[in-house]
Length: 371
Image 1 (tube, rainbow, N blue to C red):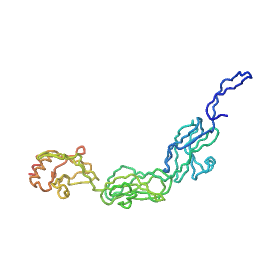
Image 2: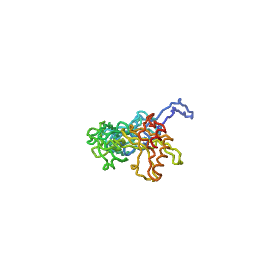
Image 3: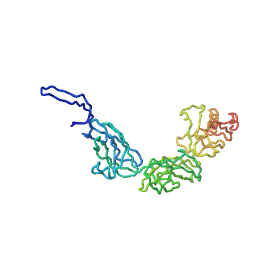
Image 4: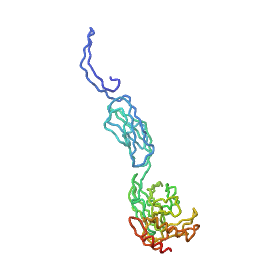
């Protein structure tokens, strides 16, 4: 009988009455068995998991050196009184190894397709056929779906124009939904479920099986910027959302400095402005820049203009000398206390080159018209 598993070297032995000993040659014997194994989850599996998503964990086996031809984990929908006898009654299997050297740490994954509560035991069967189990872990599996709206993260349309998005889903479990579509807001939101009551409107909706792929059509009647989220609601009322898509509708535009102007300048010193206009494609007969003595002016009171040109994406560039002359002339005529247009080149022709708009005529032409 061997005290524990391991490799032993056996020799036959005989001693005479006179006390003389005789030995056979050494013979190695590897002893395997079920002595003293303990299983545990060294890195416990998450107690909450998403359906259709693999979850990793580590089974630790402590005990003597040996081998196992069956190492992994099993789970049940009801907790078994004895996992060994319960193997034949409703047990399902996670990953397994069909050959492993003991002891050690062993990585596995498990995946549940349906929501519910599952009872998981790490498992090892030794070479004598004896089963060893880790303590039970309870895992709650919830439905989970990932949604995505196909296409660019920003779109530009006109009021009344329909646009169709592809709404794709992944995850599980397979189910039916009576609410599949999209909703939009006029301000950004980080939690569409919490802000559902403030949504500005909804796109087309449908029903069907999930996960799946659908075509969702949207249309806005008013110009503006909208933040659109794909949406699916399961039968138990759980909401799932895509990442947002920004929709710029109609004549909503954003103006910004392509290059930040210098904060300090001197009298009679020219400045250089590049203004970028983003938004839906359209026409404008009025582009330019203004300045006020007040830090909070009403920017709709005074405007300067350039001839109509295609928008958006056009960058307006005003050369140093042109801007300096126009400002100098207007300050002289209007006075320094009122709102003054920085730019007023009337019907001067424009030339578009490499995404920028430049004044085509020379300084003399502008001066002739202004004087």
